[in-house]
Length: 505
Image 1 (cartoon, rainbow, N blue to C red):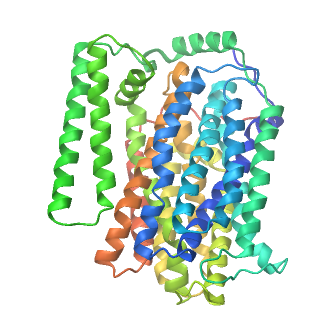
Image 2: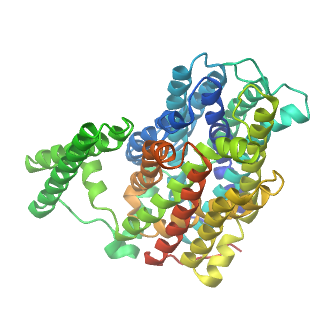
């Protein structure tokens, strides 16, 4: 029994929801720092205010993946999560630009990002569920196309409202400009409608059909299927790993306290303690022969497929770079290129609008090259394609330091866009062939650990680094991000290239 080959338009329909998801995500990325700064946040405080987004993803995504693997309703397996996340995200998008205080904005970001993650995580597994292996590359490329397209419009909206419709991009101190407010309102509507299109225009296989496909994939993948890990050696490994993380986290936290270092650093290492304790708790429960969702999640986390472990490092440095860009581009461009930090001035708000244009360009490039990357990968290999794309992005970020003209800033965004398109598709194409079919949703969720962990690290240490070593000059955060992206490209060469790239006819 084989999965049916889907038509182009069927793949289009099942991916269309990503248009809305990225529409909302782009508004969040391009405007959150602006909202925080307008509400009184200092430059070195902005990264820690962003911490809600990655922490939420770290918690939500594997849980949603685990439960969506085990869900079946009248709407299917993944679609209920698309719908619930879309409704909550749309509400949060309406609330965010009306936040009266900084902490309400930070709390709304937390809710909004949790809701976006509920919608977004199952979409990756949706490709694995519905498409045969030879069409998955096209499926991820289609998602990249909609991600780029949605982000283009979402990023550009504040600029369009001001320059085409005459909506004001300035306001009194502590008030979000109308151009940003209306952008978020439109984003909330588009998010919900796009996801509803996928929910009602797509179908999912029944549990019986999925079981038959899983059995077939087990036979085809052979050793790739995760084995039984309920052995004393494996349980002991989990306990030792948990103890090591707990002790390391405690020692570094004590050092931070003794040296009176910035308090944001506690988040990273207290988080390490928490994860270590969870591993230890899981090992104790497994010794007592207790098996439940918690022990399965913690055990599978420790025993990821080898390809996934190698891709983890690539993802870490890639997303560290992206997060540094999302946090600091507004401050770097307004301060380093335009020479202003006055959030009430027209010059500052014109510069912030130009950042929306820059984000539009890199997302537009990503949409344009989404279907080109699989063709290149077929010629030179998926690893080399990803390496070249990440190096282009890294050079783009570093080059912003040397640019003093706003028009020339468009050029680095071409490299960033190529990298962004590759980050959204190539790692998932490499990964999908190494995952057990029965745990596709869970492992896609876990894989996003390596999207959110670097964001937590960036939010924890970037503000400290910029303040301590670079005299609060945000442009240096972009240089650090560029170097990180190039490192990610080089690490791609370590990944075993087992995925065959097939171009859909």
